[in-house]
Length: 218
Image (cartoon, rainbow, N blue to C red; front, top):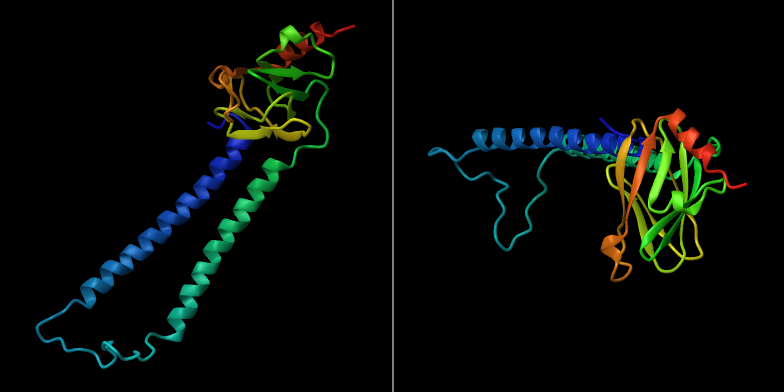
């Protein structure tokens, strides 16, 4: 079962590519076997009139109908893959304009830890390397870096973006189930890169907002 909206998109796209590849493979190999058997050499076989001869340009072969059919099928398959790919990418890269309070979070990468800032001024020691979010809510993350290039990614969510000093990259997801997931830096950022591990905690909405309201800085 997919745990987030991004994983649903990637799984659907992967399924589209896989099923089309299987269908095309079955069709191609079926034709290959059929023509191999039908046109195999026999003792009574003779060379066809249009057999290529070394040093001579062969005459045109085939039929226009076969060419049109082949090109049409190829075009349909390519269009399906292109439309599916762009649709999934557009959905993944376009964050929702409005999210609930506590669901727009700033992610700041440091050597070698993650800092998460909430819109209620949450105490820093409650958020170092721990990202808490509510289940079944759109979550928007504004990702940047305080020092060098990093790459923020959530394992199991199929979501990742660069964390670059002076620039903010926005990603979003919709968690479908509660649970704990690993956050990792995917960009070599120094000698402590391997220690740059964080944790995503997807909480029930009541539990999340109870924590969120208890950490307000007055």
